[in-house]
Length: 361
Image 1 (cartoon, one colour):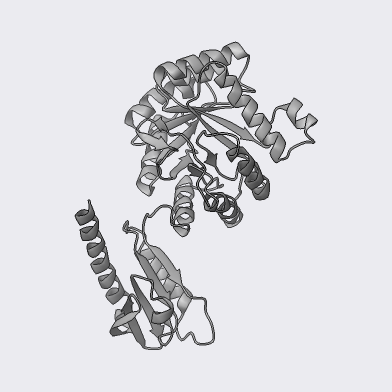
Image 2 (image 1 turned 135 degrees about the vertical axis):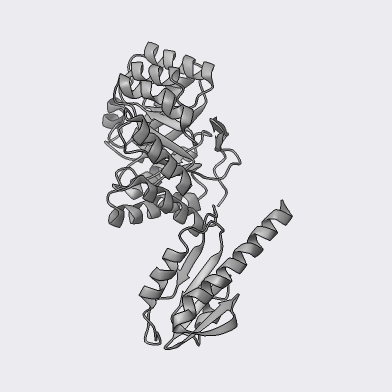
């Protein structure tokens, strides 16, 4: 599927859209007025690979806190503002790297004009954020309620308000908690705008439900070439949002961050506790950044061949474990040494990857 063609915009030093890779975002769940707590969480997000974060701006104190937060944040910070144009102006004055508003509920056109003019002067992009619960009421009621058409029409109307003031440094999001509705709306929106698209499933829920719903919605759109930046919205530690986002991207070969662990399902041929083995390997791989593929297989007979596309793998059978690379068995080891031998080979593969990357650069 051909990728949706979008123009690029800069959020501080991060490009969104155009020919840039899909950008991973999250949102702090700290009190923005607590500068130290917010910065601590931003550091944790950045370490996990988050490239842009968003913070809530509920009042003047939070907007003023942005100056210190942005100054020390290693990644761009977006100010999330609802209803109050004055807070949007204050966020821009305090060096927010971007703002997220709904121009339809931020106030009069004069207020939107003031926001647009200041954002343009400071070269700060605006995300027009539309959720299924925040549609233009006239459009919603005239188009049969909340559906893909009314969502897109609302987003286009809100973009047009900014365009009236010659502001086009816009990113658009159009989310719902319903994965299919979100997919349908973004498909339609992608046909009508060349703005970068921020995609996600809003209010996706706890990790158990939210990860699946996000993977379905975000993954489907990305597979169709739609989306320039993503946020996985979970009722959980936002670091998990970042980890999940990269797993979705990695499964579609769109971003490579950290190892890809593959493991066969258990069957009657399995002679080891495969779930326990796979979980132990997953923990050992957590701090590794190189995008290598590691296989954990439960059958020494078929395992190496079935996982021959893996860079390195392990196949267990009673007391005999096989270590293999690219489908070829290189070692036979005892159970007590299996994980150590696997990780030795992982380290070799990592070094080879880094040497190759340095040579190509």
